[in-house]
Image (cartoon, rainbow, N blue to C red; front, side, top):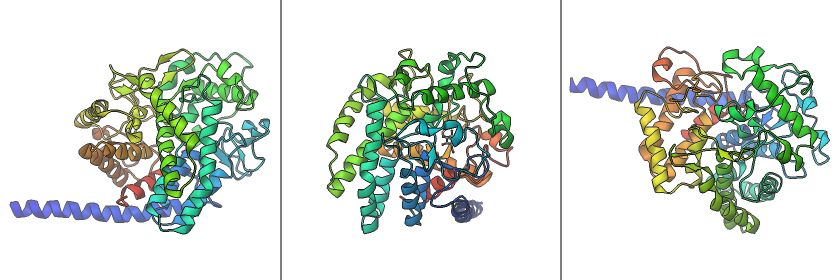
Length: 454
Ligand code: GLC
């Protein structure tokens, strides 16, 4: 009996190893197939261009086995940086690709005189991931002169990007920047944004006619609803009206959010820039000032004691947005909470794991807004697990960290390299694939990085 048990557990162990080896090859193959001319698309069909934070996570993964590809990815992203410092959330490297809405012609980034004429781009941004990504790459390739030169070259561009956020997006000089479009948050369709989005009134003629493409490519019950989409277009038009960086945006936008997750990622990336500056003897004086201000205001603005978590702040209506969601966990990654707060967040995760969910659902599983299949309203996102895993390790919550990692790996082994995944264990048992786009780049790269031992 005992022997049988030993045999079974070593077989399970061995089999998991085989699964990992098989899937590591597959992951690299996906990234190779999604590679275009110097950058990686998130997935064919649904997202055929270069997305900002996707690109960051991809370069993390590729840096573990093909450093040239990784640096090329970052270089290509910065080729789209605007004069004001903004890095757009999409770069449309190919103008022949017509299957995406809103395409470059709809964004018309030329309304801003400092937007490059090529590559064409969107007019909004995404989470500031490049600081921490560069630090990771530099640390793991310290002896490589090419990498050190590259980081030295990109460093001022990342600083300039952070300068954009502090200059154009922080009207009250709090060190906490706002977003004016849910797409900037990366968590596009989260219930977090519902109330503010509902306050936008769409009158006849207030948005131009448009044709969605996403619902013909992905299943409709996984995508945002139509009335939501009209409001996305409304906010896009509002940005365009003010050249995407005018101060009127803050004055007029009905959607004006300080996103706790994006600000945590900025703080993490600031810390990385400060570290890089030390290592490479560069000047990070300005970054240190921003960082001190951001850190001093973060906790009282975003922590909610009743929910035991960080929440977003609605700057238009001057109130916290009272929902538990995945972004509230990311401050661990930036070493923001003290031990007491961090352990509340850890207990929250332990608890939902015990209740039959894989970690980490993107939205509060007890909320009436939780939808386990729809885009950002509940499912698990691979790159989020990557950040939460490292965040938990920062506080030595090793067991929960391992769960966050192994849950994602289990889901990928069972359901494939999809964009996102079902969180309820009993439902996963009945499924054969994940949700959203297939052969997804950040799923592949998070998988590679998590298995790289770094
Ligand atoms: C979706 C996600 C966003 C991501 C993009 C490309 O819009 O919400 O976070 O960057 O797809 O993968």
